Image 1 (spheres, rainbow, N blue to C red):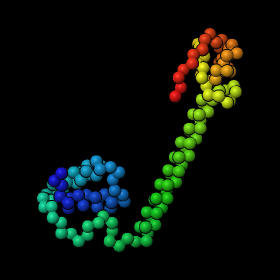
Image 2 (image 1 turned 90 degrees about the vertical axis):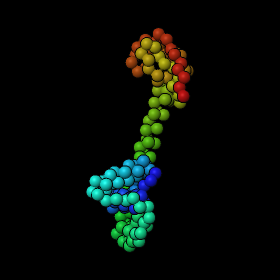
Image 3 (image 1 turned 45 degrees about the vertical axis):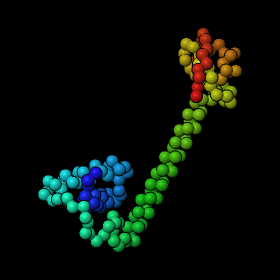
Image 4 (image 1 turned 30 degrees about the vertical axis):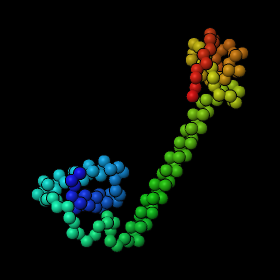
Length: 150
């Protein structure tokens, strides 16, 4: 791409210093490098040479402190807890949606009949056959429809 190594390293180092993390996607990283290059160009600095004569080639601090390691561990633990909460919430929502697909009368079979004219989908085929009225809204059933549910 023709990006100077010094420019890329400085842009990434600046991101780590400000936010403590690198980027989620390569596109975000490239965008930040291009922005950094433009700001440096406005300030009159040039990064035309590809050779790098700096001593450190890593993005981590030279002497990581114990506090830095602890803060990284607490961030990781917080992220883990947030993901666990999200998993629990998704499981709850799946159970709720599965409950909507169970017959409201027998509580065993999946719903399979759409009642007309009210369009309620709350009964399985065996429970819907003997009914004259909708159990939800008490409308007289004039017909049934069996939709394909995936």
